[in-house]
Image 1: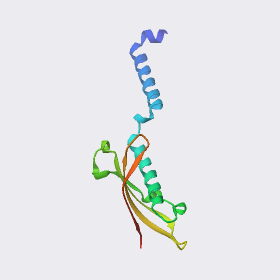
Image 2 (image 1 turned 180 degrees about the horizontal axis):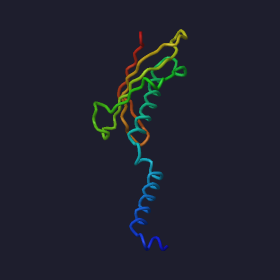
Image 3 (image 1 turned 45 degrees about the vertical axis):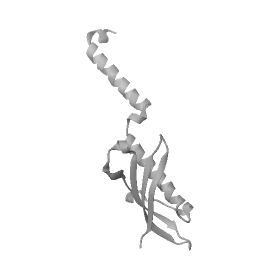
Image 4 (image 1 turned 90 degrees about the horizontal axis):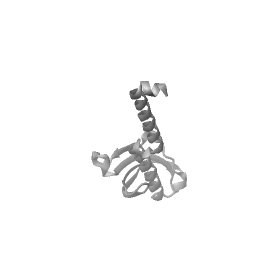
Length: 124
């Protein structure tokens, strides 16, 4: 109690820092929102790719070749993202084939995404 009376500014700053840390833990939406949306867009695009191929259960998506960007380089408020990447999946004969996809999604709600466009091309 004596410390608070002697150093009110330091005590106030410590309290503000504590509140800020707690707020950051309680309200995760205030942190890394664009990064979270990027991961969600990638996940939804992978689901959309699986909906458009013959053998969805065999699809494997290597992370190192995935590129995610805001559509047309517009601001985050646009809520549309373009995801490009590669995946391996079995063709109709059972052979694993590498393919490339370009997927554009639009965020329509907190956790919902709408497919705008998808292009899937087999690599040769």
